[in-house]
Image: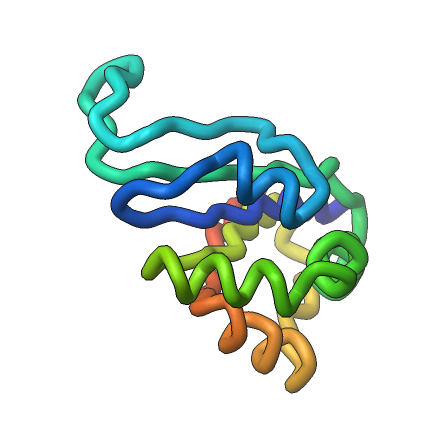
Length: 130
């Protein structure tokens, strides 16, 4: 069995988390402002984070489609906000799988172009159950 957990994160120096939430139409599952005291450290950046529900699938596209449904309607406004505030975004995938069959990890041109518009990058963490 393979499960995929996607977390979308927007981060940078200082920005209005509430304003970003209104633009994207979602409340964050986690956020912090620069210099907030976190569990074991002082936060060095402001971040807005939204964790999607874990998907059981061999195809990373099943998680990406959830992300696209949220981001596409407000893409231009999100892009403008990210550029105006000099922010970066990240798609963080946590993939847990057995040895066989292995998951398909593919990013098509549409998602690459979308990430380019929101100054985004991809982080994949792969965990193999023994």
